[in-house]
Length: 85
Image 1 (tube, rainbow, N blue to C red):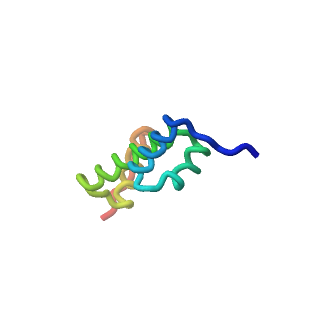
Image 2 (cartoon, rainbow, N blue to C red; image 1 turned 90 degrees about the vertical axis):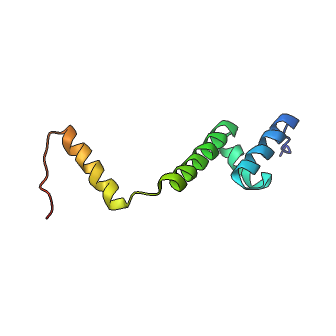
Image 3 (cartoon, rainbow, N blue to C red; image 1 turned 120 degrees about the vertical axis):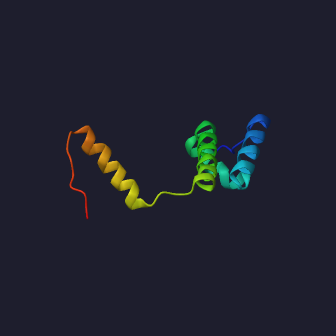
């Protein structure tokens, strides 16, 4: 089996990604090998943005999300539901 070698550019990219993810380069490497740099970088950016949004705006309870989702689906299909008392 041929040993794995990263170019200096890939090594810097791995180190930067690991730092942004709060992980070590060795921990991130297995994900980069499986999914590629582009996907891993996108995933870390989106995860950090979601964490920031949660800090700013809080969370919506699951039951409320389900109610809103059902209302959107019902509206799209022209259905009305009875309101619970």
